[in-house]
Image 1: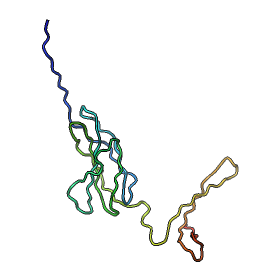
Image 2: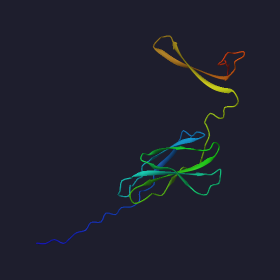
Image 3: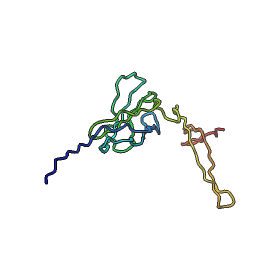
Image 4: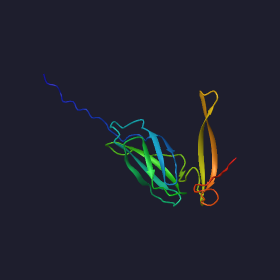
Length: 164
């Protein structure tokens, strides 16, 4: 008895876009992005993720790939210019190609969360561990000081005045 040849064709497609794109730790020169894997890999394993940015401040009209091959659901973007606004997006890639992008809902602004440090003034956070009776309880006493670097009246490291 002979059997007819049976051909099985498995349809493979591009993956769906990554989900829940989030920007974290935004600084003047870098930021971190994270996302969840796509709902569908298109029938082929995800090989990597691609991350792109668009500098809105310079009114660039083209996206630049900044992380061409992140193998995990996170990426560090470096080389941002302080004060510039950026649109960010990510794509999942399998052997067929790249997904449609997932874009952050709002552009980020490259800046340090603590603001600019001017002249010789610093903001110092001093954490002093204190013991409170009974000895089994400890707490932190937070003291924020604004210090100026001086070698005249206050010594080499300076002492500050307490901010209230």
